[in-house]
Length: 188
Image: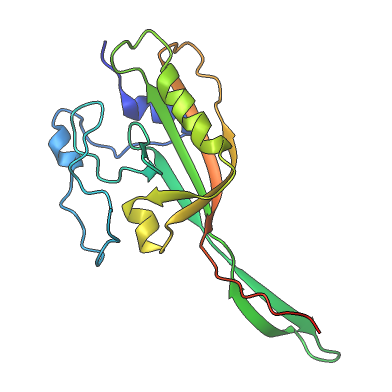
C-alpha cells in the first residue's frame, strides 16, 4: 500500500506542498543550508522517512524520533511594560523582555509494517512523552537556531483520522524552557 504523506498533511493540517511534480523525489532534498554550529547531539540528514527520502528536519523529543518529519511552528514575542502619560500621545515603554517561544508540532504516525492497523507503539511513546511532568529535551535544526533545547509540553491532541485505521494524527503544543540556578538568601 502506497501512502502519500503530502496528501495526508494537506488533509489533516491544511499544508499545501510545493507545486511541482512528485516523479523525482530527489528534487525535494535541497543542499543543507549552513546556519552555524549546531549543538552537540544535533540531528543530521542521515535519518530517512517513510518513502526512503532523507529527512531534512527530523525532530527528537528526549530519545524519541517523531515519525514522518512532522511540521513544527515556532512563535515568539515580547513582554513590554508600558505606561500612559497624560497629555502625550502613545505610551512610555519601560521594560522589554522576551516571552517563551511557543512551539507547535503537528505530525502523522503511520504503521509502516502494517498500514491497516493503528500505529499503537508510536501513539504509546508519544503519550508517555506528553504525560511526563517535567521539561523534555528537543532536538531539531529549527529549534537549535532559536537556542531551544528544552520544551515544556502543555497540551497534546490525537485528532480523529477518519477512514485511516493505520494512521494517527497528533499535535503537541508547548513552550521553550531553560534551566535556571536560583540562590536562596536567608531572610532576616
